[in-house]
Image 1 (cartoon, one colour):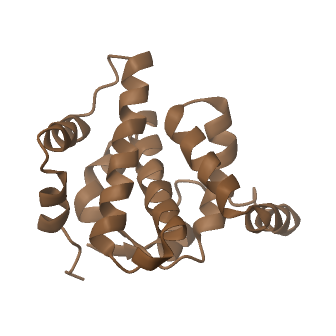
Image 2 (image 1 turned 120 degrees about the vertical axis):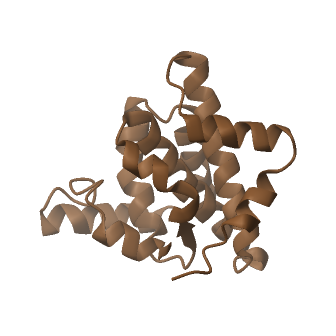
Length: 171
């Protein structure tokens, strides 16, 4: 299954309050803030989220990043990440969003490769795995089977093989 980020974010019940807590005024303020950020500020926010995806700062910046990346045209492959959404725990949610943000950050930072879905999907997964490692450093019992398997693939140099096996070409 493939899903475009704007549809994912608009249809998602994962962050219903994050996109403005139901208030049009709050949503507009969030949009103005998110769209006022330059690429470097967004990149720093993505890296901050990656460093501590379960921290209070991550919870605050997540809605801003969601809104910031809405206009970008890139795919988040649920064939790759579906089990994270199914688990409904804090670690899985944080890593899912980090993959979304890492992919969007790659698209924004590397405009010349913005249509190379393998490149941005790989970048997103790598970002998510770094975030997962940061969580494990603080909370070693927070293991997620899928993420452990992806870490092994990455460490063995086969993460791109995983991306290419699940490219989301199916509708």
